[in-house]
Image (cartoon, rainbow, N blue to C red; front, side, top):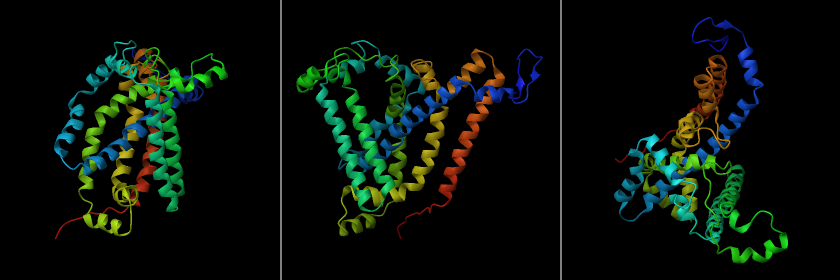
Length: 334
């Protein structure tokens, strides 16, 4: 089908590599691939690491562990489409929308403080990694901290940085505006600056519970002797996470990373339900869907699918080669 001018009514013609050539010079296809990369980055950064962090925090809860685990797992029992439609109601672009109703009562200083807290936490992790000569992960943590800080503060940009304002007036009014709230509700799904992350947030809400339970089960397999040895060496809480927990969970993290990465490239149904590809959110999978089933261009759509498939196969082979060099360990009691 990828090598033909395919007609579902018959009389299809063989066209050779024309479909692949047309796809390679299709600007909209490359834009959809770029959107897929944006979406994949957001999915990995927001849905991949938080379950690990949540599992570590739940492991340290002194009481009520079963209650908290149940609460975090409950969103997973809701059907995916229902989750998307529920959050679409939360994103209503008016003051009556649940999310806007909450955010319009939060002053700008809260966004700034939350961003600075995220920055400090990431810098602390990065500093400990740099101290132990782990240069690349350390720099990655520090960069991630600045990105998270900027993302949090940008939510308050309509309050702190009104458009068309003179620089002198902005400097004078900056401190008083820290205690102001949003002047108007966000247009979450129609604004290209917020639409993509708005499609990812429901996945974070629904996916943290199941992912957290997997990591909790793995944390149970870490012997207490490792933590006691770390205490004797003077390791702090951050050191235990970086040099005790993460090395042991590394194989599981890589396996889940492969699944999350591939799933992020294939989860176009979420965007279809939320924005239908509007506000610059049309990803590669959604582009293929529209090309095949809306415009009935089966040949180009199949060529796009093959190109996307080869990209996923190449990434998976690379990750599996890394995984093959890892050493899996099990613990047991005599």
